[in-house]
Image 1 (cartoon, rainbow, N blue to C red):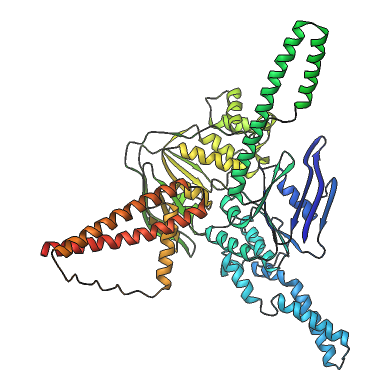
Image 2: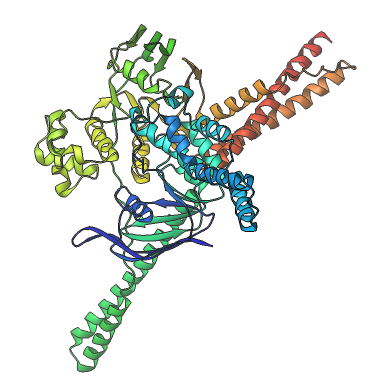
Amino acid sequence: MIEIQAKDLEKSFEVGKTLLKGLTFQIEQGERVGLLGRNGAGKTTLFKILTGELDYDAGQLVFAPGRRLGLISQIPVYPPEYTVEDVLRSAFARLRKLGEELDALTCRMEAGETDSALLRRYDALYARFEGFGGYDTDVAVNKIANGLSISAAQRRQLFASLSGGEKTRVNLGRLILEDTDILLLDEPTNHLDLRATEWLEEYLQGFHGTVLAISHDRYFLDRTVRRILEIENGTLSFYSGNYSFYAVEKERRYQEQLRRYEKEQAEIDRLSETARKMHEHNTELLHKRAFSIEKRIARMRTASKPVKGRKLGVQFQAAEFTGDEALSLRGIAKSYGDRTLFSDVSLKIQGGERIALIGDNGAGKSTLLKLIMGEEPPDGGRIRIAPQTRMAYLPQIVTFEHPDWNLVDSLLAVKRNLSAPSARNRLALYDFRGEDVFKPVSVLSGGEQSRLRLCMLMDSEINLLILDEPTNHLDIASREWIEDAVEAYDGALLFVSHDRYFLQRFATRVWELSDGRIRDYPMGFAFYRAEKAREEAQQTEPPRQKPKKEPVRNPGRSVKRQLELCERDIAKAEARLGELDAAMEAAARDYEKLMELSTARESVQAELDGLYERWEALGLMEAEA
């Protein structure tokens, strides 16, 4: 069944500038669809049209009758006394109405009414009531709140006191509890930590309704959607697969269109040269033939030259680092009132390391970065920054001292050696062009403000780069650009991120902030995940007794032969590890495949560890023999 059908939808906000140009699409019941496009392409506008918040200028839009639609980016206004718990339970308004009608019907039946229509109505309402959870709503609320990291303390807070991100998370929980038929998710992972994001992915995999999601989280798209719609220059392109399929197919289509265009241009050039030579002979017959060729050339011009999005070609300038230790933390502690974020944290960053600081929302990650940058003092301990360390910091929430200044003036304030034309040229490298450079900073989107801040940072010679959620609010093209810039930077890196593509690509060490302490995992993100899975399995499984080693009954030649066999098996296992390492490097951006390879590697490593133990035991036995 078709849930949403649109035909020739158009929307403009300025005369002569059409944002959406005749969009035509349909979404079937139960589909999982990703909506992609650069920031400003019109994705959120389309969502607002679907919910009725905005009118469209032309076209048709039809929904299947009786379908309930919810948009996560819309945060309703609640009475000022509403707590988070009240907001979550407002999802059961429909259920309460059913319960009230059931109670009224029960009273009528108890009064002696036996009409068959009344009984049928009661049975139908009761079936719906039970289907929506009946009177047992506590279990549902607790499950959703726990999954989205909405703590018991937060559930008692006034909803109005929450941050924008916290309100978005609570609103997502309310929409899920409402049992909405069609979920419109506008960047749902921007305000979720890793644990909550993965919970949402699992929930959506079991969700029976339809999902249309705007997201720049490539891992989320790979795990949740099965079809991609991309808005580009006001029109739609369709891709029958997840994000990984889309990325490969988009490049294939580009190359195919480029080959067709180049082939057509080569033929046009050949025919044009032929027509030119015919005109030069200046005979009536050849003129006629030349005119015929020129008409043919005009009919041939069917393929337009494909255009790729402009790539930003700037990089961080890393200063040479001569020491070993760029920064050290010794006994660091920080509390706010009765709440201790962390205590007795002792860690260090060495030159060239790339460290991911991860943890649940509210654990204190951004606070730790602020302590390192000197924006807040620690309650205890000492932070030592090496004399040769030069730091640069991109905060999660970018602010500017003079938000009313335009982009050129803001850049000149920190780059005093630049002239105004040079400042405009530098801004153009960051995709700020034309009259955009004279906009006030305050009107920029969150992603644009992050890009402007990076423009101010990138020219500095730094050797310790600190990033707090650097890809939040950026579209996929901008995320790929900053990833390329970080890839080319060879200094030390400390970053907070929930973007699993970014984590997988850059983390060579993981600091996990949890329960007031930081655990250090000297490994990449994939191995960290495998290690965490093993730790969790050990906590849930009873300890196993190690199998007794069978004694070698025939020493001498028998031991020597077993040593040879063991060494052969070790060589095979080591070779297999090398193959898996190479395969993991090749699959660096295919994270489903990467996790499979990581699990296989852990198994081979465990086997190799056992072989080493056996080899050592056999070596001792051979020496004793």
